[in-house]
Amino acid sequence: MIRGLRLLQMRPIFYFAADKTPATTQGKQQQAKPIQVYKDGQLITKNYLQLKKSQDIEGYVLSLVKNYYRTTNKSALNLDSELEQHGLDSLDSIELSMQIEEDLGYVISAETLPVLNKVRHYVNYIKQVEQYKVENNSVPLA
Image 1: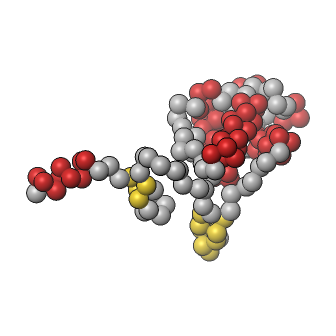
Image 2: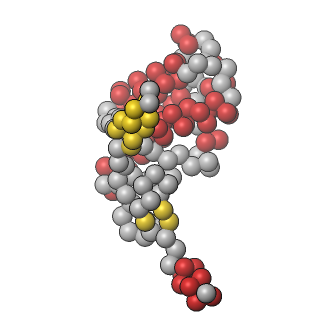
């Protein structure tokens, strides 16, 4: 019994919650795959958004923040706006980040969340992740 525990401790294998496929921390990182979600009682396959151009990324983030239900002063929202100027706090920033994760297939780490205070911060983050995907042909884990 103790031998089995030692073997498990020596070979760390992590499982992705969605598909239970083993992945190690070494080697190539896995590509973002389409996900299956329930909508209106039906299981549908959802593809992630593909944002390549800078204008597409900026438009996506602006529309995301404008359409968020707690945003105030929506007409004055621009790329340099701080979230606090529009009535959003840190919990709203977390919800916006979760929406980006869901739409684009990213994983935004908890350490990154405190620096996402402006609309432009979200745009720059998405641009960096897209650039990483192009250069390394993989999606960063966090």
